[in-house]
Length: 264
Image 1 (tube, one colour):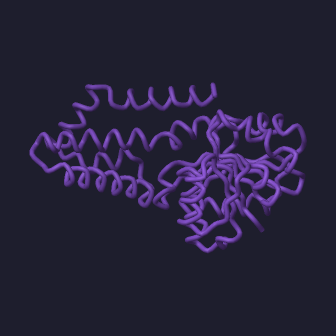
Image 2: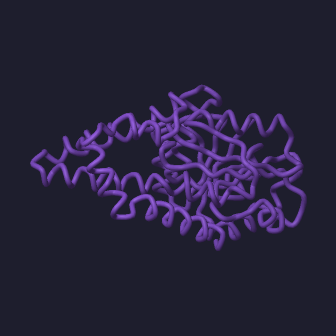
């Protein structure tokens, strides 16, 4: 079994790192290509994988082809590889906005397809990936790809109709969280805390809070109430956030992200 990555950016590197760390594949079972020799060399040196100079070469050799390029480049990439993809190969796309139907039309023939929406916390082994497939993809193929995805975080099966929603709530949402952490840290700095320490306090609080939601299974509102003592500091802060439209702004941001994904 050989896995081929077309595109060796941050997400591809996160995937390769997780796969190798969990021992699911050996370095000599992974090949990849990127637009520049510099990127190819860096990834080969870091992970010990094989690299090729063309998309077509990767597609010919790989049993599983992972399209790890931005949506605007997919049409060109598929044109490069379509003659090298037959009904035995499995194609996995991680591009936002490009549906299985769109991918099938671009290949102009029946192809086993899996669509994945990962996110950047995969870089630290805490990714969240949504997965769906077409009818040509076998259960065995599907479960193997899910296992690969779970090497760098969680992977959940969703209907394809939810993929744009996944982009809004998971794929793009790390950026919202980074803004929140930065804003909290800025306020702490204004209060006199050294910036490095402020980032550590803010980030650890977000990490711990997320873990409480996942580990306890409690509703976020219930966990919020546990922190809000009567006439205390926390409820005062929550009052300001509500007054400033915090939840509405977040909902509007996620909705805008979903709509943008639909338009890609």
